[in-house]
Image (cartoon, rainbow, N blue to C red; front, side, top):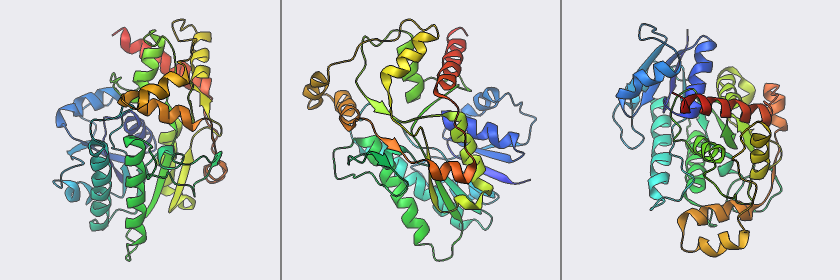
Length: 336
């Protein structure tokens, strides 16, 4: 049985990846910054402590300790851990440093291990679609970080570029790599942790915490599809050394999400837009508005997912099912 190291095991996407890996018969080693969360992860996945197919190790994106030991007995590495926040941080280095350094540590550990055959890196459409006005984004496109794109977008772009530089400069060809580039990730939560960006966004929409919404578009994807593409990439050689776009082919206006939720019984979701002029005028002295303005001003764009469909025979879960299932899981969490 092959073993997979999954970084950031308690995260929204990582939990789904671990669930999918265990279902497919892999042994999983999940990394945590705080080992006290191990029991929480087991509980989320409904796996008791006697089950030896899931083990844990302590890793920190900003520290060297433990990385080589974590990777030495693993056949594959899913590097999912990376900080994510919609609001702009006080300093962009708070997002960029852990994203970049964690990626390099994961790749160095994979190279030093004699076993790791492949690394699958969780990147983002953030590394593809910003700082330019292309209407159809492809795996060949890169975000222009010289433009004012925001700290999170910059962190994902810098980290992914550094990963490809590492792989291209690795003369030993120690392992192959695939990056998965999802849009905004929605879908059911496996844990009770609703601190993630999409869970927080949907929770606030459902509970009427937003009087209005920005006129923003983003491409979206179901977390279960993202996890499946990560796991399928491990053994699918056609994905070797490719960027895999995992998202809707067209941008979705946030109001469409609100309408779908409203149609399914969430009557507190917003029905009005925040005037774009107001967002732009506040952006110069409000970090949250600056981040929002970047998204609004980008407008709608599409993504070329033809290669993803071709390599994986991918049939994405519908947006309505994604939102209904996420809404139901949030409802269950709130009644606990």
